[in-house]
Length: 506
Image (cartoon, rainbow, N blue to C red; front, side, top):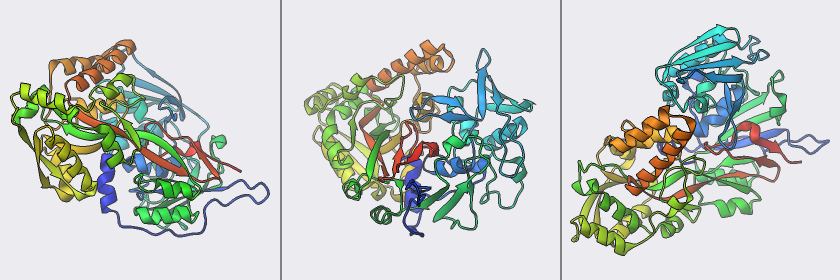
């Protein structure tokens, strides 16, 4: 998954080689692999639970820690360390009942006090995802197996966030240790072998012999090998040095399948234009819905999918994913390629003679894409003047220095997507567009009944499409590759499949 934060990570990380021999050691008597070697695109930022990153770094945390709740492959939520979870009437107090048979690898019991401490440490910690717990006012141990989380205001994303790094639990005894960032003490399925690990290159784990859920541990050993260079990753695949891996792009899929790997596709991001100056602050033209609609009609999204996305993906006009309760298949084709209609809308808005948009460009996202979409806009009378933003692309668009720009953005679960892309305070609503209709729908999603909330998500999706808040081209395919000895089920809402969903094939 090419999440927005990964753009800077890939650009910054130096290419690293692979150490070790062929992947997938096996039991000689059964032929079943006992070692799983996974390719990852970024090294571990830290193993300290309060600083853990997610997305492409999720396997590091999942190897050594357990989360309070579990995210199923379809995005649904299930018990894990917490066997039961209930809200009060206004959903501002969440009560968790914990398992009582779990121990950390230092031998101490995992109890409510440890969980409460971890929740507050994550909220106040250094993780780039610390906002997952921004609504948490306090977390306390009611008794040894009960945790009470008090919220400042209800948070529809909280349960989902507790399936991720925000819900991971580290032994409190490790909090003050000098090596807390490199020698994790959790209750997870594996233990990091510090002696065999080469930080930044290869992370080696052995099975936790006392793991409370042994049915989830399908391998005796786990290795996470870092590849920030596409050529090095392809060579490792061809050389059989990994059993499975994420891919940075779809450029090498033919060679990957020729090497005997299976491609497991998933769609986690949308690609297209952000039309964020919806009030016309920097460019009055963008404040006219007809201009924004014209921009949508100007794009031949099927051609762009082939030219930019190598054909891997699905054309769409909506930013809500298929897993959303608000997803509407009809909205995938709300704007079809229609240059004549685009010109008519521009004329009706007073721009029959055309208009000019200022946009950033960067080689980090390739150069051809900017030429391609500028030409399609020019064909309907819109001229794009580019400024090379280089490595400042993300900071410039968030500043915001531009009212519209090209981007690849994640499709989160509904509430997270709204808070990330649509709400007045959203990161990618950097002009802080706000209107009464959207505010009312967000309020209903936040505090309404389940039925009312679900309908409001549908209504919000349609409103955003009808009013052309964005100009999506397609949902791009992310591709996870597995060899002939490995089976995996991809995760609906994460770049990397979860560890327990890897199983060996004899």
